[in-house]
Amino acid sequence: MEPWAIGAESTIFKTEQWGRPIILKWRPEKPYLLKEIDEQLRRTRTSRECKMLTYARLLGVPTPAVHWTNLASCTIAMDYIEGRQLKLMAGTLSRSLLHELCYRFGQSIALMHRGNVVHGDPTTSNVLIDGKSRLWMVDFGLAEWNATLEMKGVDLHLIHRALETTHWDQQEDMLAGVLEGYMSLLGSDAELAFSRMKSIRERGRYH
Ligand SMILES: Nc1ncnc2c1ncn2[C@@H]1O[C@H](COP(=O)(O)OP(=O)(O)O)[C@@H](O)[C@H]1O
Ligand SMILES: [Mg+2]
Image 1 (tube, rainbow, N blue to C red):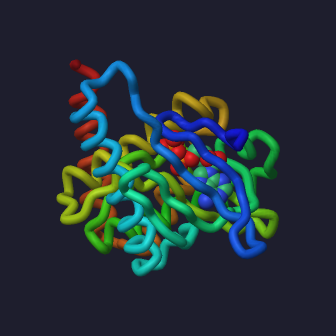
Image 2: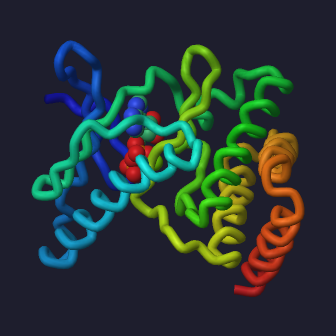
């Protein structure tokens, strides 16, 4: 089967099951890692991703539904989202639609944080926008439960950093949209997370 997309740590296939399109996310072996460590890592991430895709849905975050998971082959079968990465669309959207999508991105992150879950890799490649301008979150292999304020601050910091590196010309509008969306659900808890994000950013400057 031809790969449909190649991600940072996975290969994505698009196929069909019972006449419906599905995505297979497969984490292949990494030849440069020690075999046992590699296998452990791939299984942990696969298992975590499967649980977190579902748990995030419970918290209200739109994610593709998981059909099955095979930990032996490190593969997850999930719904195919007919859409594109926010990263690739950002440059083509009107300012108001981009703001709206970033606002909803911020709200999705807030729903997770309210449930004490962090996404772990909240970049605009992991946000998909479908043909009806609905937003979907993917890539939960680094997500964590029992998240502390520090972990939430790191999640926000990662968004900030992703926006400044991949969307340097739109980053201010986009960040404003994300933070407004986050704030709309979390109120004063959002302020705490924002100030943690700022202090993490300050710390980063000296490293
Ligand atoms: N369920 C899905 N439906 C449609 N496209 C998907 C789906 N899951 C992943 N993709 C596409 O494949 C890319 C890589 O998947 P991702 O889960 O982010 O893997 P990686 O951990 O390798 O980055 C995503 O950015 C997205 O474009
Ligand atoms: Mg990804």
